Length: 297
Image 1 (tube, helix red, strand yellow):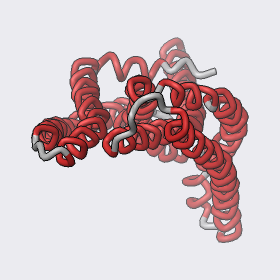
Image 2: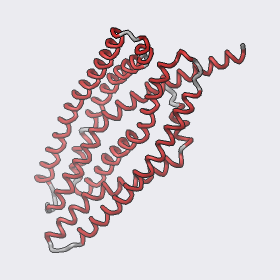
Image 3: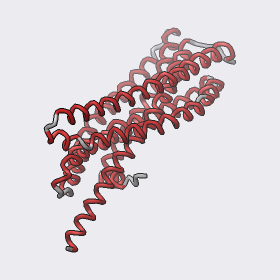
Image 4: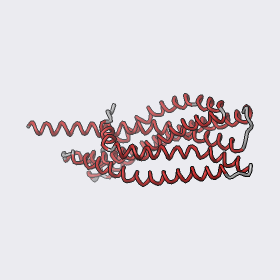
């Protein structure tokens, strides 16, 4: 299993920048989660002839918009600096001429590593906030809905586990083929080149098929949560149902199921990330050993 030393070192080196960008994202998600609550309040207040809820909704939206704009501007500066530093150090450590094919493939994999921090990790954190935040806020609307949401988590995790094992194998096989790319192209042999790209195409198709099947299964769970939650809310709610309350409940159910949809994606990304880091770290060890042998000689 990959030790993820590269990822840990990279995060530690840029810990202050990353901490700031994730803090901004946390504040941004807070505003994102509160918008349905204040939207429901605005609707109820407007029905009663009051603009108080509308003013609060506007204020929350403007704060969310401001924080999001600042974060997006800061993100680009942070992650381009990380990628430039990572790929420069990575390439300078390679001194063997016969590693050009792996260098090319690994420089692309290094981009994927930085993309994980810039996009995928943000996506994962957003999913966590959607699941946890929605459950907390749904509890204040209708506690029975929370039980329905929690009941579907176990089968979702089970499906995601088997999905992750399958994707781990497929990603490894695709990256094995990718590492050969430059060497195959440099041969100029049209038959080998065609075979290589056909192989990459087949692995990508198999990955896509697995994603499609998983998407279908997950959407079955999603519709079950939505249907049962709305039925329970309308039939068994102990309080008076207002339009704003229904808007809030439905919005948070949507956010919860959006978080559920992300779980298989998270599993897939971590499987891919482990394979990428394993290759880079294993190659680092070979380069370090090669340099040591030369020094001894």
